[in-house]
Image 1 (cartoon, rainbow, N blue to C red):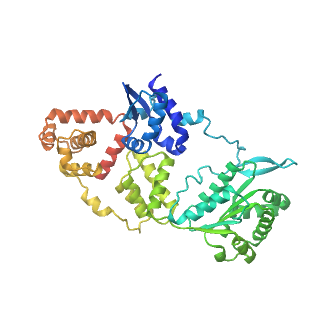
Image 2 (cartoon, rainbow, N blue to C red):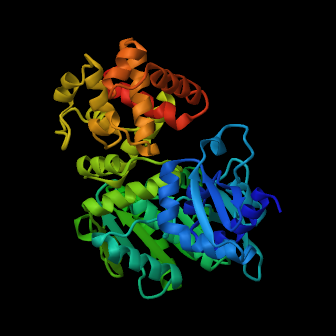
Image 3 (cartoon, helix red, strand yellow):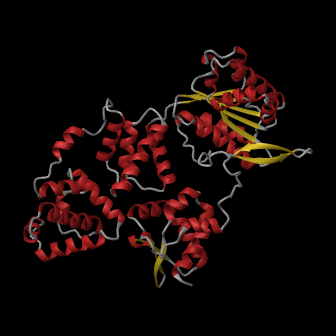
Length: 480
């Protein structure tokens, strides 16, 4: 059996034991690259992916491999950047593996519509059931200290719609995940009870439909589409303030659904008692079920959210950079995602990995009045003017979290060799120093050693995207 086919079969055994998003992120473009006697060598495209897989999945991989070949007694992981090269077919495309295994679900959708038609009841009446954003799941809602109750209640509602938590009212400030939670409940109910009709709408859209129905004299049709659903999810009910016709219609819709034990889920930016310009009878109904508040996430939860988003976006970012974002973006989950998305976009466009410096500039750009914690942009700008080779050595050493002595020393481990070669390359190309002078600065090395390092880096930059991003990030730290 070919190495790639062997690894493909091993991945088929692994896949059911690992969450889909994690499986795609960490095992994309991996493969078995060699087998020596009883040792199996598994190639991964980046060192970060290697560290993660070794720490998290070694035992599962050993089990899957030994089921296929009991003679394998040792597994070794090796970074092989060519696996992720465009046009390379050495690595396994796990996305295609998931499709072939039937793991991905296809939903038939009406053209130019966000709804599907469901036939319901003996009369075969056709009702529109909302298609929700499948990015929002209870599984990827990060549970922190302050939002365990909302998540637990949401799970209970998903398992017993129309049960004890009815209505279910979620409130909290902008950007804390109310829409995520309410749509996740809808997705979970559709999964658990495929025969149920789930309708999601914003209060603003509900008001618009009321106005249109009154204008076109279609109120009967309007009422029917909302009073024949099993689960009704409505976002931002504070928008009903001062809209008396819409409040009245929603009041009757609410009563009709509640009396028939249909699940009602609502979100707002404040608790029911503080909804000004809303009928008291509506406020009392909103508060008669389960009311939960989403609070601002603490530091640990913010870091966990950022890591979850990196998994969803299928990108790798230095944990220190994520912690820096979490320290400086504290108001909302949406704010965290906004900074992260911009950092990833700039990284892809400029071909460089996000650094604390680049993220600090993004945060400052978004909010000029904000004080940046853990980084002084102005002082760093002034301090990073490169005047000589020592400046470059300091920047490279800081970037790779090693010392200048490591760069100059004799250590030949890859973790030191690569930064050393990058350092030589940058000194040659940015400062124009001779090979002899560079070698002298690196502990008296021969000029041919420096020449080899520079030539090797030049070749690698043509095919190693990660290396390109690293060097571009270092150049940015140099003010270039």
